Length: 162
Image (tube, rainbow, N blue to C red; front, side, top):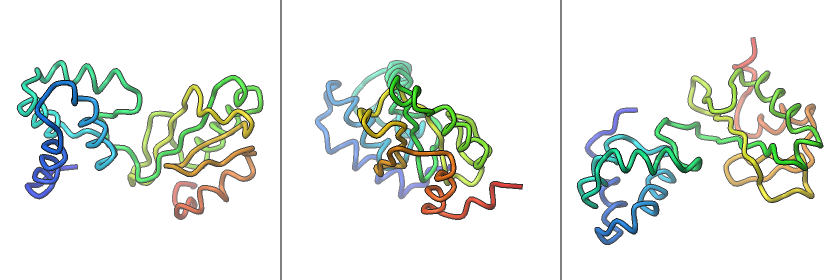
């Protein structure tokens, strides 16, 4: 994804909402992530200049936090909990079914940029195990034969099959 001049202006507007103090680094990175679903290199360069932080230090921060990504993510981010309660109740089967339908592994995005798949250690919804979240929508007590139906709410999944 190439960032154009308009996007550069939008990025800088996000960055300058904060005082140019290093204590705001993570907040700025989170806001950029929220807007673009990842942190473009051009944003890192702007933040580096604005906060007077080495680019390598920003990369360290951006790669340390799992919630931040330097690679573009899909429009819909599927997070499947693989914590103890979910794991015991079959989260791996859920993950395998999503992999089979979308033809991607955890950490990957479909070629069309619609879906990304992630596994997480805990979503804090153990009573709903196994649970997955698509963007901000929780789906609890998920069973394999419901996956296709759930994904269809976000667009056609037939295009991934075949």
